[in-house]
Image (cartoon, rainbow, N blue to C red; front, side):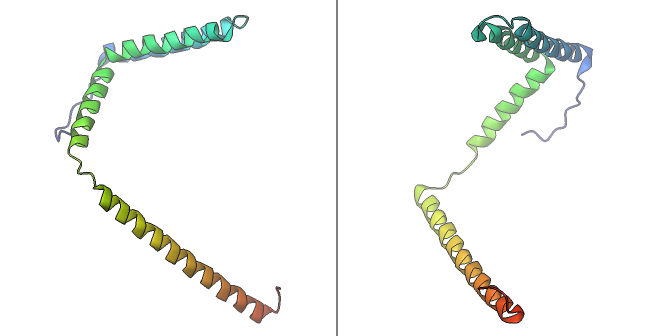
Length: 126
């Protein structure tokens, strides 16, 4: 990612595009309810169409440009990751399982001791 800070000057045009995209999605939802007597697939057409058209409108705004830049930067960062080998992953998995087993046995034993102490002090329990 870049270290420079960008000024978020959305501008009136980008705000208008965002509002238009929201209105397009809402029109698709309204279309869904207006087609109440139609088949289900036909009712969903305006919703899907509204979402697709809204995505196109957003893609041509500064928000879409920022999203594309973010996705590009994320891909660059993913290429920098050094993934563990299969053997390292297997050994880490074994260590985690052994630790979970040891912790489970410890807490099981602690529970038995505390239950015994509670029964001895209160005289209750089986």
